Length: 466
Ligand code: ATP
Image (cartoon, rainbow, N blue to C red; front, side, top):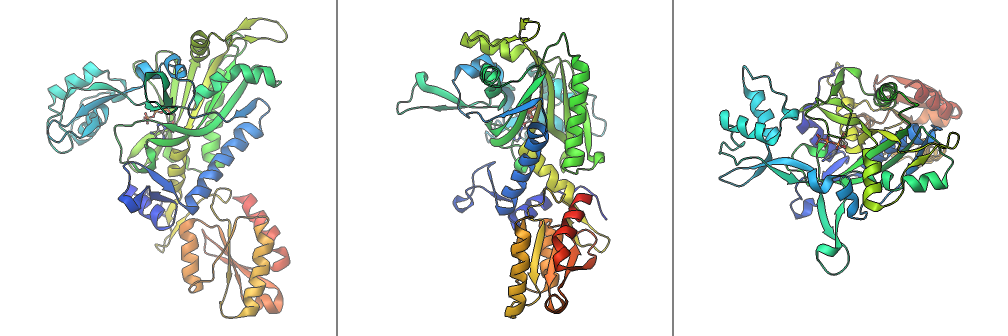
Protein backbone atom coordinates (compact mmCIF):
# COMPACT_ATOMS: atom_id res chain seq x y z
CA UNK A 1 0.00 0.00 0.00
CA UNK A 2 1.31 3.44 -0.89
CA UNK A 3 0.86 6.20 1.70
CA UNK A 4 2.59 8.94 -0.26
CA UNK A 5 0.87 12.30 -0.05
CA UNK A 6 -1.05 12.81 -3.30
CA UNK A 7 -0.55 15.99 -5.30
CA UNK A 8 -3.18 18.70 -5.08
CA UNK A 9 -3.96 18.14 -8.78
CA UNK A 10 -4.73 14.48 -8.09
CA UNK A 11 -7.14 15.45 -5.31
CA UNK A 12 -8.82 18.18 -7.38
CA UNK A 13 -9.23 15.78 -10.32
CA UNK A 14 -10.72 13.02 -8.18
CA UNK A 15 -12.99 15.47 -6.38
CA UNK A 16 -14.42 16.73 -9.66
CA UNK A 17 -14.56 13.37 -11.42
CA UNK A 18 -16.46 11.67 -8.64
CA UNK A 19 -18.68 14.50 -7.43
CA UNK A 20 -16.97 15.57 -4.22
CA UNK A 21 -16.17 19.16 -5.19
CA UNK A 22 -16.89 21.20 -8.32
CA UNK A 23 -15.52 24.65 -9.19
CA UNK A 24 -18.43 27.00 -8.42
CA UNK A 25 -20.35 28.76 -11.23
CA UNK A 26 -18.45 26.68 -13.79
CA UNK A 27 -21.06 27.22 -16.54
CA UNK A 28 -20.14 30.92 -16.36
CA UNK A 29 -16.44 30.16 -16.49
CA UNK A 30 -16.12 29.81 -12.73
CA UNK A 31 -15.75 32.19 -9.81
CA UNK A 32 -12.31 32.63 -8.30
CA UNK A 33 -11.70 30.62 -5.19
CA UNK A 34 -15.24 29.30 -4.87
CA UNK A 35 -16.30 25.66 -4.79
CA UNK A 36 -19.54 23.73 -4.59
CA UNK A 37 -19.74 20.37 -2.89
CA UNK A 38 -21.23 17.63 -5.08
CA UNK A 39 -23.41 14.71 -3.98
CA UNK A 40 -20.51 12.79 -2.44
CA UNK A 41 -18.78 15.86 -1.01
CA UNK A 42 -21.94 17.23 0.59
CA UNK A 43 -22.44 13.91 2.36
CA UNK A 44 -18.81 13.68 3.49
CA UNK A 45 -18.90 17.26 4.76
CA UNK A 46 -22.10 16.52 6.69
CA UNK A 47 -20.60 13.35 8.15
CA UNK A 48 -17.57 15.29 9.42
CA UNK A 49 -19.77 17.98 10.98
CA UNK A 50 -22.06 15.36 12.53
CA UNK A 51 -19.05 13.55 13.99
CA UNK A 52 -17.76 16.82 15.50
CA UNK A 53 -21.18 17.71 16.91
CA UNK A 54 -21.68 14.22 18.35
CA UNK A 55 -18.25 14.11 19.96
CA UNK A 56 -17.99 17.64 21.31
CA UNK A 57 -21.61 18.62 21.97
CA UNK A 58 -23.97 15.66 22.27
CA UNK A 59 -21.79 13.23 24.12
CA UNK A 60 -20.42 15.74 26.64
CA UNK A 61 -22.16 16.90 29.73
CA UNK A 62 -20.11 20.13 29.89
CA UNK A 63 -20.98 21.36 26.38
CA UNK A 64 -23.96 22.96 24.67
CA UNK A 65 -24.49 24.03 21.05
CA UNK A 66 -25.62 27.19 19.29
CA UNK A 67 -26.49 28.22 15.75
CA UNK A 68 -25.83 31.92 15.27
CA UNK A 69 -26.24 34.50 12.51
CA UNK A 70 -23.73 35.22 9.78
CA UNK A 71 -24.66 38.90 10.03
CA UNK A 72 -24.61 40.27 13.56
CA UNK A 73 -24.76 43.84 14.82
CA UNK A 74 -21.79 45.64 13.18
CA UNK A 75 -20.48 46.84 16.54
CA UNK A 76 -19.66 43.16 17.26
CA UNK A 77 -16.70 43.41 14.92
CA UNK A 78 -15.52 46.72 16.28
CA UNK A 79 -15.56 45.21 19.78
CA UNK A 80 -13.76 42.04 18.70
CA UNK A 81 -11.01 44.04 16.97
CA UNK A 82 -11.75 42.70 13.48
CA UNK A 83 -12.63 46.10 11.98
CA UNK A 84 -9.36 47.56 13.22
CA UNK A 85 -6.94 44.70 12.83
CA UNK A 86 -8.26 41.69 10.90
CA UNK A 87 -5.57 42.44 8.37
CA UNK A 88 -3.30 40.55 6.02
CA UNK A 89 -0.11 42.06 4.53
CA UNK A 90 -0.93 42.96 0.93
CA UNK A 91 1.60 43.54 -1.86
CA UNK A 92 0.91 44.25 -5.52
CA UNK A 93 2.82 43.29 -8.66
CA UNK A 94 3.88 46.69 -10.00
CA UNK A 95 3.42 45.61 -13.62
CA UNK A 96 0.24 43.51 -13.82
CA UNK A 97 -1.31 44.62 -10.50
CA UNK A 98 -1.96 41.09 -9.28
CA UNK A 99 -2.16 40.99 -5.50
CA UNK A 100 -0.42 38.67 -3.06
CA UNK A 101 0.15 38.15 0.64
CA UNK A 102 3.64 39.40 1.44
CA UNK A 103 4.29 36.60 3.95
CA UNK A 104 3.34 33.99 1.35
CA UNK A 105 5.77 35.46 -1.21
CA UNK A 106 8.55 35.50 1.40
CA UNK A 107 7.76 31.87 2.28
CA UNK A 108 7.91 30.89 -1.40
CA UNK A 109 11.21 32.76 -1.82
CA UNK A 110 12.69 31.00 1.23
CA UNK A 111 11.73 27.61 -0.16
CA UNK A 112 13.70 28.32 -3.34
CA UNK A 113 16.95 29.23 -1.53
CA UNK A 114 19.66 26.60 -1.15
CA UNK A 115 20.87 28.15 2.10
CA UNK A 116 17.79 29.99 3.34
CA UNK A 117 18.27 32.47 6.21
CA UNK A 118 16.56 31.37 9.45
CA UNK A 119 13.33 33.39 9.42
CA UNK A 120 10.07 32.72 11.26
CA UNK A 121 7.75 34.16 8.61
CA UNK A 122 4.63 33.90 10.79
CA UNK A 123 6.19 36.31 13.30
CA UNK A 124 7.19 39.08 10.87
CA UNK A 125 5.58 42.52 11.12
CA UNK A 126 4.97 44.81 8.11
CA UNK A 127 8.28 46.70 8.46
CA UNK A 128 10.28 43.47 8.73
CA UNK A 129 8.55 42.10 5.64
CA UNK A 130 9.23 45.32 3.72
CA UNK A 131 12.90 45.12 4.71
CA UNK A 132 13.24 41.49 3.59
CA UNK A 133 11.53 42.20 0.26
CA UNK A 134 13.89 45.12 -0.34
CA UNK A 135 17.05 43.35 0.83
CA UNK A 136 16.50 40.17 -1.18
CA UNK A 137 14.71 41.83 -4.10
CA UNK A 138 11.80 39.42 -3.69
CA UNK A 139 9.61 39.49 -6.79
CA UNK A 140 6.05 38.48 -7.69
CA UNK A 141 5.50 34.96 -9.12
CA UNK A 142 5.56 36.62 -12.57
CA UNK A 143 9.05 37.99 -11.87
CA UNK A 144 8.01 41.63 -11.45
CA UNK A 145 8.83 44.05 -8.64
CA UNK A 146 6.23 44.37 -5.89
CA UNK A 147 4.91 47.23 -3.76
CA UNK A 148 5.55 47.78 -0.05
CA UNK A 149 3.33 45.53 2.10
CA UNK A 150 0.32 47.30 3.56
CA UNK A 151 -2.48 46.10 5.82
CA UNK A 152 -5.55 44.81 4.02
CA UNK A 153 -8.69 44.16 6.04
CA UNK A 154 -10.20 40.78 5.12
CA UNK A 155 -13.62 41.36 6.70
CA UNK A 156 -16.39 41.38 4.06
CA UNK A 157 -18.69 44.38 4.11
CA UNK A 158 -22.26 44.51 2.90
CA UNK A 159 -25.39 46.57 3.50
CA UNK A 160 -28.72 45.77 5.05
CA UNK A 161 -31.92 47.28 3.73
CA UNK A 162 -32.61 49.13 0.50
CA UNK A 163 -30.44 52.21 0.94
CA UNK A 164 -26.69 51.91 0.82
CA UNK A 165 -24.82 54.02 3.32
CA UNK A 166 -22.57 54.04 6.35
CA UNK A 167 -25.59 53.67 8.62
CA UNK A 168 -26.55 50.21 7.49
CA UNK A 169 -23.09 48.84 6.80
CA UNK A 170 -22.76 45.33 8.20
CA UNK A 171 -20.17 42.57 8.00
CA UNK A 172 -20.28 38.93 7.06
CA UNK A 173 -18.74 37.24 10.08
CA UNK A 174 -15.03 36.52 9.91
CA UNK A 175 -15.37 33.79 12.55
CA UNK A 176 -18.27 32.03 14.25
CA UNK A 177 -16.81 32.63 17.73
CA UNK A 178 -18.28 36.09 18.30
CA UNK A 179 -21.82 34.69 18.01
CA UNK A 180 -20.98 32.62 21.08
CA UNK A 181 -19.82 35.62 23.14
CA UNK A 182 -22.91 37.59 22.08
CA UNK A 183 -25.14 34.82 23.42
CA UNK A 184 -23.16 34.07 26.57
CA UNK A 185 -25.75 35.72 28.85
CA UNK A 186 -28.66 34.10 26.98
CA UNK A 187 -27.15 30.67 27.54
CA UNK A 188 -26.47 31.39 31.23
CA UNK A 189 -30.04 32.62 31.74
CA UNK A 190 -31.82 29.89 29.81
CA UNK A 191 -29.91 26.70 30.65
CA UNK A 192 -28.47 24.98 33.72
CA UNK A 193 -24.79 25.32 32.71
CA UNK A 194 -22.12 26.09 35.29
CA UNK A 195 -18.39 26.62 34.92
CA UNK A 196 -16.40 25.07 33.46
CA UNK A 197 -18.50 24.60 30.33
CA UNK A 198 -18.22 25.12 26.59
CA UNK A 199 -20.42 26.42 23.80
CA UNK A 200 -19.95 25.12 20.25
CA UNK A 201 -21.12 26.58 16.96
CA UNK A 202 -20.81 25.34 13.37
CA UNK A 203 -21.35 27.61 10.41
CA UNK A 204 -20.11 29.66 7.49
CA UNK A 205 -17.48 32.35 7.90
CA UNK A 206 -16.17 34.76 5.28
CA UNK A 207 -12.75 36.26 4.67
CA UNK A 208 -11.61 38.35 1.76
CA UNK A 209 -8.41 36.31 1.44
CA UNK A 210 -5.61 37.71 -0.70
CA UNK A 211 -3.85 34.44 -1.48
CA UNK A 212 -5.96 31.86 -3.23
CA UNK A 213 -5.42 28.74 -5.27
CA UNK A 214 -5.13 26.00 -2.69
CA UNK A 215 -8.48 24.41 -3.48
CA UNK A 216 -10.85 24.33 -0.46
CA UNK A 217 -7.96 24.99 1.96
CA UNK A 218 -8.35 28.74 1.69
CA UNK A 219 -11.58 30.13 0.30
CA UNK A 220 -13.59 33.33 0.73
CA UNK A 221 -16.51 31.39 2.16
CA UNK A 222 -15.84 28.42 4.41
CA UNK A 223 -17.19 26.53 7.36
CA UNK A 224 -15.88 26.59 10.90
CA UNK A 225 -16.65 24.55 13.99
CA UNK A 226 -15.66 26.65 16.97
CA UNK A 227 -15.87 26.17 20.71
CA UNK A 228 -15.48 28.68 23.51
CA UNK A 229 -14.70 26.79 26.69
CA UNK A 230 -15.39 29.04 29.69
CA UNK A 231 -13.70 28.56 33.07
CA UNK A 232 -12.78 30.29 36.30
CA UNK A 233 -9.01 30.89 36.15
CA UNK A 234 -8.82 30.76 39.95
CA UNK A 235 -10.29 27.26 40.04
CA UNK A 236 -9.13 25.69 36.79
CA UNK A 237 -5.48 25.43 35.85
CA UNK A 238 -5.50 26.77 32.28
CA UNK A 239 -2.38 24.84 31.31
CA UNK A 240 -3.97 21.54 32.27
CA UNK A 241 -7.19 22.48 30.47
CA UNK A 242 -5.22 23.50 27.41
CA UNK A 243 -3.43 20.15 27.39
CA UNK A 244 -6.75 18.32 27.76
CA UNK A 245 -8.09 20.17 24.70
CA UNK A 246 -4.99 19.23 22.75
CA UNK A 247 -5.65 15.58 23.64
CA UNK A 248 -9.34 15.84 22.68
CA UNK A 249 -8.50 17.43 19.33
CA UNK A 250 -5.83 14.83 18.61
CA UNK A 251 -8.28 12.05 19.48
CA UNK A 252 -10.93 13.47 17.13
CA UNK A 253 -8.55 13.72 14.20
CA UNK A 254 -6.78 10.39 14.65
CA UNK A 255 -9.58 8.17 15.97
CA UNK A 256 -12.86 9.69 14.80
CA UNK A 257 -11.59 10.96 11.44
CA UNK A 258 -9.02 8.14 11.22
CA UNK A 259 -6.11 10.31 10.06
CA UNK A 260 -2.57 8.94 10.39
CA UNK A 261 -0.50 10.48 13.20
CA UNK A 262 2.56 10.84 10.96
CA UNK A 263 0.76 13.56 8.98
CA UNK A 264 0.03 15.69 12.05
CA UNK A 265 2.06 18.03 14.21
CA UNK A 266 1.57 20.70 16.85
CA UNK A 267 3.06 24.14 16.19
CA UNK A 268 3.33 26.69 18.95
CA UNK A 269 2.89 30.34 18.02
CA UNK A 270 5.80 32.59 18.92
CA UNK A 271 5.17 35.69 21.04
CA UNK A 272 5.31 37.86 17.94
CA UNK A 273 2.82 35.77 15.98
CA UNK A 274 0.26 35.36 18.77
CA UNK A 275 -2.66 37.80 19.02
CA UNK A 276 -2.01 40.33 21.78
CA UNK A 277 -4.89 39.05 23.92
CA UNK A 278 -3.89 35.40 23.63
CA UNK A 279 -1.71 33.87 26.31
CA UNK A 280 -0.98 30.66 24.42
CA UNK A 281 -1.73 29.48 20.88
CA UNK A 282 -1.00 26.18 19.19
CA UNK A 283 -1.97 25.08 15.70
CA UNK A 284 -2.68 21.47 14.91
CA UNK A 285 -1.13 21.20 11.44
CA UNK A 286 -1.80 18.56 8.80
CA UNK A 287 0.55 17.60 6.00
CA UNK A 288 -1.44 18.89 3.02
CA UNK A 289 -0.05 18.36 -0.52
CA UNK A 290 1.52 21.84 -0.21
CA UNK A 291 3.17 21.13 3.17
CA UNK A 292 2.25 21.23 6.85
CA UNK A 293 -0.49 23.85 7.33
CA UNK A 294 -3.00 24.81 9.98
CA UNK A 295 -6.05 22.62 10.35
CA UNK A 296 -7.23 23.55 13.83
CA UNK A 297 -6.23 26.45 16.08
CA UNK A 298 -6.23 26.31 19.87
CA UNK A 299 -5.94 29.60 21.76
CA UNK A 300 -6.21 30.73 25.36
CA UNK A 301 -8.03 34.05 24.80
CA UNK A 302 -8.37 35.00 28.49
CA UNK A 303 -11.45 37.17 29.22
CA UNK A 304 -10.70 39.53 26.34
CA UNK A 305 -13.72 38.87 24.11
CA UNK A 306 -16.39 38.82 26.82
CA UNK A 307 -15.03 42.05 28.28
CA UNK A 308 -14.85 43.72 24.87
CA UNK A 309 -18.41 42.75 23.95
CA UNK A 310 -19.61 43.88 27.39
CA UNK A 311 -17.81 47.20 27.06
CA UNK A 312 -19.18 47.97 23.59
CA UNK A 313 -22.74 46.76 24.20
CA UNK A 314 -23.17 47.95 27.77
CA UNK A 315 -24.52 44.49 28.67
CA UNK A 316 -23.40 42.69 31.79
CA UNK A 317 -21.62 39.58 30.52
CA UNK A 318 -20.12 38.54 33.83
CA UNK A 319 -20.74 35.20 35.53
CA UNK A 320 -22.06 34.74 39.03
CA UNK A 321 -20.93 31.57 40.71
CA UNK A 322 -24.10 29.80 41.98
CA UNK A 323 -22.31 28.54 45.13
CA UNK A 324 -19.79 31.22 46.13
CA UNK A 325 -21.74 34.12 44.53
CA UNK A 326 -18.45 35.49 43.26
CA UNK A 327 -19.00 37.60 40.12
CA UNK A 328 -16.30 37.70 37.45
CA UNK A 329 -15.54 37.38 33.74
CA UNK A 330 -14.73 33.78 32.84
CA UNK A 331 -11.67 33.04 30.73
CA UNK A 332 -11.86 30.97 27.54
CA UNK A 333 -9.90 28.39 25.62
CA UNK A 334 -10.92 28.30 21.98
CA UNK A 335 -10.52 25.28 19.68
CA UNK A 336 -11.33 26.59 16.17
CA UNK A 337 -11.58 23.99 13.41
CA UNK A 338 -11.97 24.64 9.69
CA UNK A 339 -14.49 22.10 8.40
CA UNK A 340 -13.44 22.56 4.76
CA UNK A 341 -9.83 21.92 5.80
CA UNK A 342 -10.90 18.80 7.71
CA UNK A 343 -12.70 17.69 4.54
CA UNK A 344 -9.57 18.19 2.41
CA UNK A 345 -7.48 16.40 5.04
CA UNK A 346 -9.77 13.36 5.03
CA UNK A 347 -9.56 13.12 1.22
CA UNK A 348 -5.77 13.51 1.19
CA UNK A 349 -5.24 11.02 4.01
CA UNK A 350 -7.58 8.44 2.43
CA UNK A 351 -5.95 8.59 -1.02
CA UNK A 352 -4.22 5.19 -1.45
CA UNK A 353 -2.93 2.71 -3.98
CA UNK A 354 -2.43 -0.98 -3.15
CA UNK A 355 0.51 -3.11 -4.31
CA UNK A 356 -1.22 -3.84 -7.64
CA UNK A 357 -1.62 -0.11 -8.34
CA UNK A 358 -5.36 -0.23 -7.67
CA UNK A 359 -6.65 3.08 -6.32
CA UNK A 360 -9.08 3.35 -3.41
CA UNK A 361 -10.21 5.91 -0.86
CA UNK A 362 -9.59 4.54 2.60
CA UNK A 363 -12.27 6.59 4.39
CA UNK A 364 -13.57 5.39 7.75
CA UNK A 365 -16.94 3.72 7.40
CA UNK A 366 -18.64 6.31 9.66
CA UNK A 367 -17.53 9.06 7.29
CA UNK A 368 -17.73 7.37 3.89
CA UNK A 369 -20.45 8.95 1.71
CA UNK A 370 -21.83 5.45 1.09
CA UNK A 371 -21.20 2.56 3.44
CA UNK A 372 -22.55 -0.23 1.25
CA UNK A 373 -23.11 -0.66 -2.48
CA UNK A 374 -25.63 -3.21 -3.74
CA UNK A 375 -25.10 -4.79 -7.17
CA UNK A 376 -27.43 -7.16 -9.01
CA UNK A 377 -25.04 -9.36 -11.04
CA UNK A 378 -27.01 -8.85 -14.27
CA UNK A 379 -29.44 -6.09 -15.02
CA UNK A 380 -31.60 -7.98 -17.51
CA UNK A 381 -32.67 -10.73 -15.10
CA UNK A 382 -35.84 -9.54 -13.32
CA UNK A 383 -35.56 -12.17 -10.58
CA UNK A 384 -32.04 -10.92 -9.69
CA UNK A 385 -33.18 -7.29 -9.73
CA UNK A 386 -36.13 -8.09 -7.50
CA UNK A 387 -33.97 -9.92 -4.97
CA UNK A 388 -31.30 -7.18 -5.05
CA UNK A 389 -34.01 -4.56 -4.43
CA UNK A 390 -35.11 -6.49 -1.36
CA UNK A 391 -31.55 -6.57 -0.04
CA UNK A 392 -31.10 -2.87 -0.83
CA UNK A 393 -34.35 -1.90 0.92
CA UNK A 394 -33.36 -3.91 3.98
CA UNK A 395 -29.90 -2.32 4.24
CA UNK A 396 -30.83 1.25 3.48
CA UNK A 397 -32.56 1.77 6.83
CA UNK A 398 -29.35 0.93 8.69
CA UNK A 399 -26.58 2.09 6.35
CA UNK A 400 -25.96 4.74 3.70
CA UNK A 401 -26.57 2.40 0.77
CA UNK A 402 -26.15 2.94 -2.96
CA UNK A 403 -27.35 0.90 -5.94
CA UNK A 404 -25.36 0.19 -9.08
CA UNK A 405 -26.38 -2.00 -12.01
CA UNK A 406 -24.25 -0.36 -14.71
CA UNK A 407 -21.35 -2.14 -16.43
CA UNK A 408 -19.54 -5.26 -15.29
CA UNK A 409 -18.94 -6.04 -11.63
CA UNK A 410 -15.20 -5.26 -11.87
CA UNK A 411 -15.91 -1.72 -13.07
CA UNK A 412 -18.52 -1.23 -10.39
CA UNK A 413 -15.96 -2.26 -7.74
CA UNK A 414 -13.43 0.22 -9.09
CA UNK A 415 -15.98 3.02 -9.01
CA UNK A 416 -16.94 2.27 -5.41
CA UNK A 417 -13.23 2.05 -4.48
CA UNK A 418 -12.76 5.55 -5.88
CA UNK A 419 -15.56 7.01 -3.78
CA UNK A 420 -14.53 5.10 -0.65
CA UNK A 421 -17.49 2.71 -0.21
CA UNK A 422 -16.20 0.14 2.32
CA UNK A 423 -18.33 -2.83 1.16
CA UNK A 424 -20.01 -3.98 -2.04
CA UNK A 425 -22.70 -6.68 -1.96
CA UNK A 426 -23.39 -8.68 -5.12
CA UNK A 427 -26.66 -10.51 -5.63
CA UNK A 428 -26.20 -13.48 -7.98
CA UNK A 429 -27.81 -16.83 -8.71
CA UNK A 430 -26.56 -18.22 -5.39
CA UNK A 431 -28.64 -15.57 -3.70
CA UNK A 432 -31.74 -16.96 -5.40
CA UNK A 433 -30.84 -20.59 -4.78
CA UNK A 434 -29.06 -20.54 -1.42
CA UNK A 435 -29.93 -17.13 0.06
CA UNK A 436 -26.26 -16.03 -0.03
CA UNK A 437 -24.57 -12.85 -1.23
CA UNK A 438 -20.94 -11.99 -1.95
CA UNK A 439 -19.50 -9.18 0.14
CA UNK A 440 -16.35 -7.54 -1.13
CA UNK A 441 -14.05 -5.47 1.09
CA UNK A 442 -12.78 -2.19 -0.41
CA UNK A 443 -9.36 -2.23 1.26
CA UNK A 444 -8.40 -5.89 0.87
CA UNK A 445 -10.59 -6.75 -2.18
CA UNK A 446 -11.31 -10.03 -0.34
CA UNK A 447 -14.72 -11.53 -0.94
CA UNK A 448 -16.85 -13.43 1.56
CA UNK A 449 -20.06 -15.33 1.13
CA UNK A 450 -22.67 -14.24 3.67
CA UNK A 451 -26.25 -15.41 4.28
CA UNK A 452 -28.78 -12.70 3.42
CA UNK A 453 -30.35 -12.88 6.91
CA UNK A 454 -26.91 -12.34 8.46
CA UNK A 455 -25.90 -9.48 6.17
CA UNK A 456 -26.92 -6.46 8.27
CA UNK A 457 -25.28 -7.91 11.36
CA UNK A 458 -22.18 -8.90 9.40
CA UNK A 459 -21.78 -5.34 8.11
CA UNK A 460 -22.51 -3.74 11.48
CA UNK A 461 -19.83 -5.95 13.08
CA UNK A 462 -17.34 -5.04 10.35
CA UNK A 463 -18.03 -1.32 10.84
CA UNK A 464 -17.43 -1.65 14.56
CA UNK A 465 -13.95 -3.00 13.83
CA UNK A 466 -12.90 -0.07 11.63
P1 ATP B 1 -4.48 30.91 8.24
O1 ATP B 1 -3.27 31.32 9.04
O2 ATP B 1 -4.31 29.62 7.50
O3 ATP B 1 -5.05 32.01 7.40
P2 ATP B 1 -5.98 31.54 10.57
O4 ATP B 1 -4.94 31.40 11.62
O5 ATP B 1 -6.33 32.91 10.09
O6 ATP B 1 -5.64 30.60 9.31
P3 ATP B 1 -8.12 31.07 12.39
O7 ATP B 1 -8.50 32.50 12.45
O8 ATP B 1 -7.41 30.46 13.55
O9 ATP B 1 -7.29 30.81 11.04
O10 ATP B 1 -9.42 30.24 12.03
C1 ATP B 1 -9.71 28.99 12.58
C2 ATP B 1 -9.75 27.90 11.53
O11 ATP B 1 -10.60 28.27 10.43
C3 ATP B 1 -8.41 27.63 10.89
O12 ATP B 1 -7.67 26.70 11.67
C4 ATP B 1 -8.78 27.05 9.54
O13 ATP B 1 -9.00 25.65 9.64
C5 ATP B 1 -10.10 27.72 9.22
N1 ATP B 1 -9.92 28.78 8.20
C6 ATP B 1 -9.46 30.03 8.41
N2 ATP B 1 -9.46 30.74 7.27
C7 ATP B 1 -9.93 29.90 6.29
C8 ATP B 1 -10.18 30.03 4.89
N3 ATP B 1 -9.99 31.17 4.24
N4 ATP B 1 -10.67 28.95 4.20
C9 ATP B 1 -10.90 27.77 4.85
N5 ATP B 1 -10.69 27.60 6.18
C10 ATP B 1 -10.22 28.64 6.90
